[in-house]
Length: 234
Image (cartoon, rainbow, N blue to C red; front, side, top):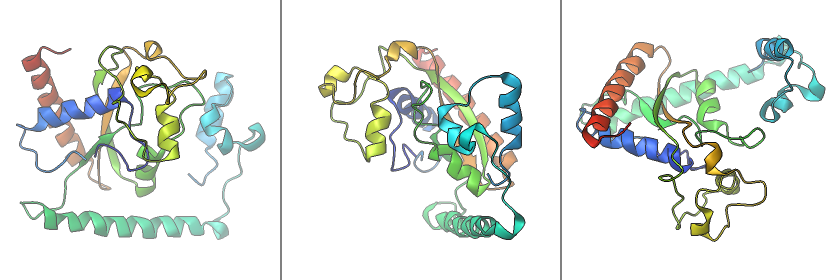
């Protein structure tokens, strides 16, 4: 899964996905690579650290205070979430009609996030992981490569899928001269800041499928290591 149809990952993550795709070609893979409790644990960790609340989660703690837990009589959202999980499970099961084995897809490989690294306040898209939390899926995150300021450039023909996609790509100028600077401004980070940071992918499977996800993750790790040796990559 190269993207979620909302936000395209930055070049380092897209390259990580391409490495996995190439490495998995000969690894017997089939198909394309494709909270209500008030967060008391997070609140306590922030208080112990003495650090300010990150902009990305400031809405979780309105006014800088812990949000009270949702009362049981109001937890209709939990019932909706369970219904959503059942519907998505039916969708996953339906994938059996598209595989040569007649079995549902084992795992899906996707970006772990839309960037390798980002400055505070510029993480605007959480859906790559938050949607999986809602589904209660098993997830393994695998570092594949590192951001390289000389390799990771933005396709000059890139067209954002959404306004959020545009803002995400504008958060870091990957050789923005190739795109006439339209995805950069005075607040844009320089790839130099993130050169060498990890670019990872995630692999997710259905609830209670931890062993399957970890098994496939090991296959991917072995395949990527073999690909790197063959192509003399670090």
